[in-house]
Length: 131
Image: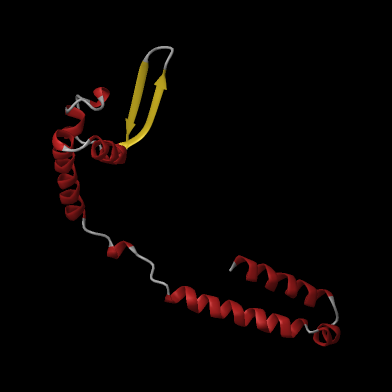
């Protein structure tokens, strides 16, 4: 779409810089008409594409219920899952990991929206344990 817009603007600039008779004889008006038609076709195609909107999102109650269920899954996988399942699940919650070999420290940052009292109290993030 950007490419078409740029071509249309260049063609308009050419048309404005030359006498109208020369622009017409040179085919610039026909080019501009074709480019405008092409842009309209693309706009119609874009309108036909489904775009999710806020109205299609689940309610906050539904999101909360899903989050609670996910935390329950976290507990069950951590207690009985395979090593690979545990890694994959924990990876969904970890935003950053910083290791400092000089001080023998590892810092793990969780996504803020996923941290709850349940996780913070479990010792995943000691600085948040008093929440």
